[in-house]
Length: 177
Image (cartoon, rainbow, N blue to C red; front, side, top):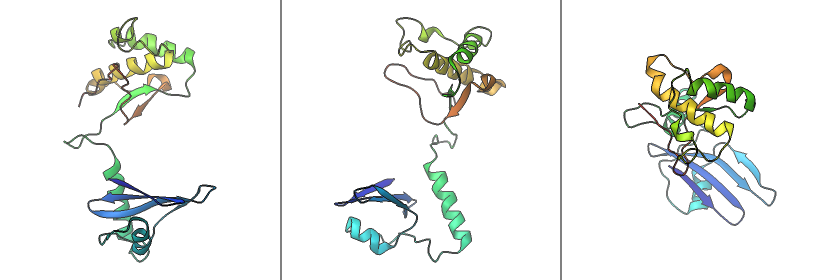
């Protein structure tokens, strides 16, 4: 859970992990300067006017505890299925030129065996009608279909894995555990 605390000229973001609160970042002043790191319980009480007795300060914490808490924080913010498996989709890399994406798209929808029917005219994933969007849909369809049979999300470097669901509007990207 992320808590955003607002005051007249400061925004403070605190992250809660298993009941422990961690200070993430404070943005303050008219020039929006940022201070990121740890803070004290008294400072947080000033912002939210509440008792955060479970707050952990890294200031006096042994290094082993710091590493453990950091690992818990990272694990807790990683999106996971209820059975512990990461949800992953395969999408077109933003840095790949359209001509390379088109070749990879042609392969995925042809010899690759991806079902590209939903990116055809008047289908739910046709719009936006860009090579990048169509390639993303085709890459993901191929990846979900073949990932347990040795298929990958490489496409000669034209694709990347994301843990953010790329679905939009009526266009739903598949995910198969």
